[in-house]
Structure formats: structure tokens, C-alpha cells
Length: 104
Image 1: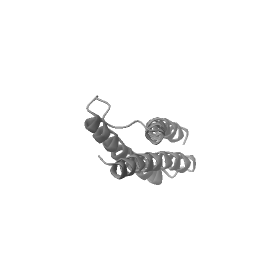
Image 2: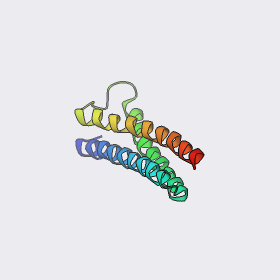
Image 3: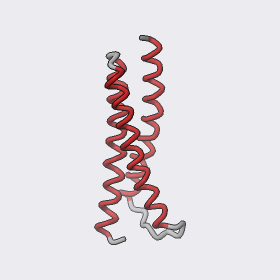
């Protein structure tokens, strides 16, 4: 993988993870207003973007083959941080939405 492909791949990971996190936050906001139809759509979008981010991560792991073939740059660490936060936000959003459904 050349440098341009690497940077594009890492930015793709950041973008998809960030969008997933945004959709999770939107789902919580929709649940607050009892708009559960929009909430459910946001959670679906959240899962879709998270899968895309995870697929990018999986491809990078495959390229690395556990041998350090993929460089670990500050941007890569930043991308992994975004992915981890997106996973956490998805899980938390589901919990919050469940609570809002019960309260309603």
C-alpha cells in the first residue's frame, strides 16, 4: 500500500467512525423527543457506518498480517480512537433509547 492509499484508507476509517458516532447521538436526540421512527433510522445508519469503519479496520489488519507491515502513525492512532468511541456510542445510544422508550 502506498502512502496516498494508506492516508485515504485511514481517513475513510475516521470518516465512517465519526458518522456512526453522529448517528448514535442523533438517535438519542430523537428518543428525547419521542420520535422513535427517526430514532430507529438513526440507529440503523449508525450500525451501517460502524460496519464500514470496521471493514476498513479489518482490511488494515489483514494487510498487516501481524508483522508490522502497516505503519502506526499518529493519524492511525486517531482513527482507532474514533472507531473505539463510535462502538461505545452505539452501545450507549441503544441503552439510552431503551430507557426513553420505557419512560414514554
